[in-house]
Length: 123
Image (cartoon, rainbow, N blue to C red; front, side, top):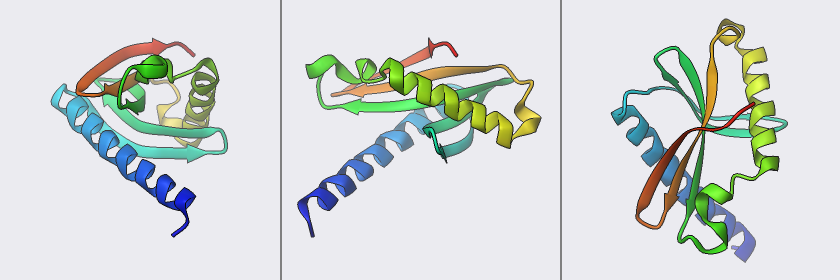
């Protein structure tokens, strides 16, 4: 198998593991699962969940360490814009959610620590 393909598959397996961990963590904290990996031409939202009536778009990030800025710093302004654009597509595809309040959270896994940042950025 080509090294790039192997590396991509390994990253996907790791990403899936941390998305599953984020989902379980958030469910343990009262959120309800709606959808994983909502994909459109702008990008992907890792998790869509409900906290009471608030639709929560969640970006899951993992970094082995805080080197190079860490997990939270990896959610750049450009990444935030892609997530916001993807949320607009969500609302267009799910008109029953159109009047629902929403927020953007980040679940950051760095080494052995977990940080849930509610309202990490605004649309």
